[in-house]
Length: 206
Length: 257
Image (cartoon, rainbow over all chains, first blue to last red; front, side, top):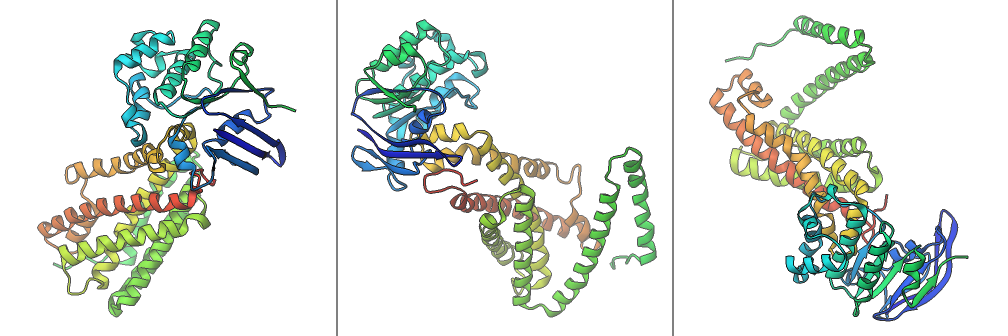
């Protein structure tokens, strides 16, 4: 369970978010939505401790997030930031990189598993052997989502996971996220259809 | 065999060589003429000063004065590293100085105590110039390594957060940046070590031969110094990066600047 208790974030001496309280239950799929610049991504980034609230407390399964617990929390999260490029030459390297970390080594997928997930996300098998610069933004976004899912973490944090996708791919991604039954998924989105597809919607705005 | 002393008149003659580069720097309007003349003047004054000082250092040959002199060199080297990398002096001075001091002492004890074996390890004739040479090389290696490490961390912040947010320990998240820093910092040294003697006669060896040593002795010193310089530079880079990390990252693993 993720609890945001009376959070305030201040940015450039102005309050970005004030006295925000909310609770995400275990296994819930929740979308943060609302106008830009009101702290959705900041809130998401506060779960792994990348941004600290100026006031208030974050609790994960009842334990307060602080410098002593942050590393345990990060071992339980999968984090997909907004559109970005990682410096890996090939798709295979990109996929394998997080599974080389000690915390994830036991989860390393076989090529067959990757192919099965590629299929579910509408990705062609040949992509696996391509160079990173040869794929589109939408393909990269789906591959990154697949990596986040294959890590089998309890908490999955997705910032704008459909921003580079066409409508057909968005449908696949929605089904894919819904199938992560065990995981608590917290997402940020501006896509109306994506937002409407999940039961838990949290408005972040004025 | 005595080394031929260069008279002041002949030195002045040697300085005339500067006319050629200065003329071309002026002709192509590089804006480097003033800097060149200023650098040559500084170099001359500094070296005369240090030569004069070393004469006394060798004469006194006191362990404490020698150590104090090396500490002074470490302070200057640490400050220079931070100035050149534009990293915060206040935050990182001690980190770099401690890294330099520890690696220098390890290597001095090893090299002088086990390999060269003079009567006293801290004797000025060996301890001061060898420490100076090691420090000079540590300085360049650390400038490159720190520039690469903090520069790529700033450029590739997303990679750092991605690894951290997907279960990496702080050490694992920084590993790609450490790797890059080590590659950038040590590639030139490895390359120069590989061609030493073929396309370049190194300074120490040339100096010793000019000073009257036999080439076979000079070569042995040169080989040992290359190994020593490589080991000390690598140890100092690792220590600087490890110690500085404790200052530059907060307890959540976020960079403080």
